[in-house]
Image 1 (tube, rainbow, N blue to C red):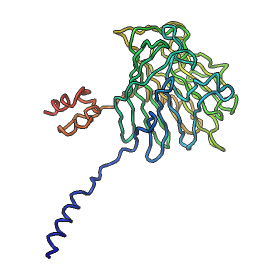
Image 2 (cartoon, rainbow, N blue to C red):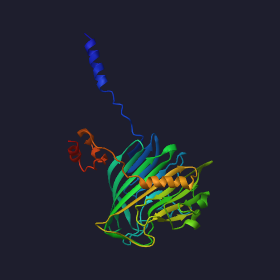
Image 3 (cartoon, one colour):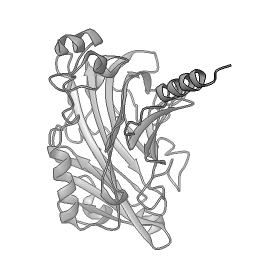
Image 4 (cartoon, rainbow, N blue to C red):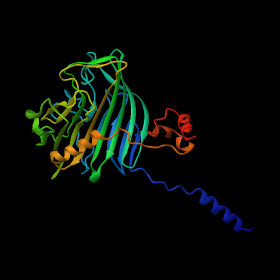
Length: 340
């Protein structure tokens, strides 16, 4: 039996089946069991989006700081039942046509409908989702499209961007809580852990900052022995009534409000677009450093330019959804037509 042709054939086949060595995206949004999406930076998870059918609203937990410690918590450390709706970082409102989506006993639910897109990249990953804001009787008051984006920064810091569009025919009532809340880890809260709250316009802690307008609000404190970290909640300049009044408490939470002094109308031809970010940082940055990060967030596009596709294969297997240049494509055929 002549072995040389057989060996040559096997070697050729082996060469053909070696995996292609493509660069792997450093930041990924990976689906997990039980309706969750893990955001990872290299091998480490830094955040997780929860959106299961048993939940009253989606939320992001955990939120991991540069030192590997959790910066947020589920529930109030002194009142876990009464504040069970304080789910780390979340979006909701306490008055939409009189329906309470904020508390766990208000009757409103934000029900996840579908994942439209998951994106990985060298510095950012994203999940694009749709949801329905439903009253207790099943009525849909609002439709939501949300971008949940993780963008990495140097030295283990990162940005969580929440970009939400609400469409329908409804009114956000005057004085409504929300739309964004952040429940800090117990060790960061001013009362329980000795943390410090600071606002962009000056002032320190609850008495000086409660419901005062600000471009950003920072909550920093101890996350481990000798470790100081924190989060800064950014209000985008395109949001209605920017700079937002911030509801802050020394017991460890903060949130930006959109309808403190007057109702906000959402009409069928006028959806409401809202954009916030949480800057996850090390140490106790100077206000000037926080201002620089806020300005960067305020100026950046939600989806950085990507594209155009250069070949029909770039459009296949759902990849047509990635492109923003020359435009966003509705279908694979639309993407392929642009290539031709």
